[in-house]
Length: 249
Image (tube, rainbow, N blue to C red; front, side, top):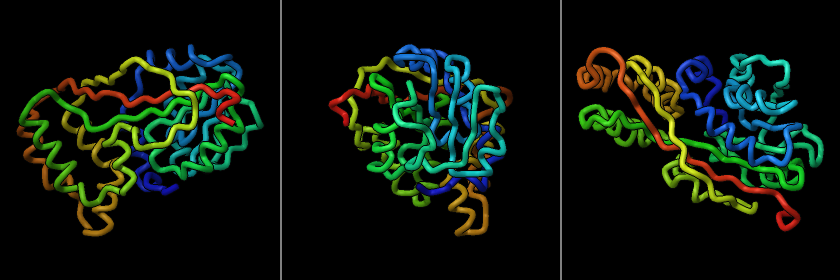
């Protein structure tokens, strides 16, 4: 798994969107029990913090020590610096495993082997993600798409294709569950958007290669299109969920 987020861990913690509480409640409701959950590639622990409202214990792991330094402290959460493919959890110990905006970076075969090892019978795996947001404004959305596709496009890792394909290109060796649609909506300023851009791995790749921040190429145009104050932005969530049973062994 690549570590693309340690360098901008502070920006990631500050600007990344927060998942809707109804999504976490839905996933907790699918789980066969409320004893333990594993939030894999937890980042700053935002999903782990939400899971702690439902589960007795939450293991929150990430390969990045810098990300974990920004994590939310909670008495029911144990943070650990671990790769997704090597979990310290015991066999058949988790009711729910969540992976938010990260599974596309994993080595799939060993990760799913760990999933099968640590999930309880009937336990749930949920892969969560999101793609590019919309401001529902043609001028703003055009600048954002240009930044995503044309300016930073060549600097995205190949794994980004799984996000663009809505995770349908990722193997899923569990009994898949039909899921409802979820979305995220936020009231953001233009500075929130620019801060969010700074957390992108492609932006960091661009900076390392060219020695300058690509955000400067679109900032003036985005500010002009955005105007003063807040705007409502939205994005559909990607969600695949599956239940572990003997057929998945």
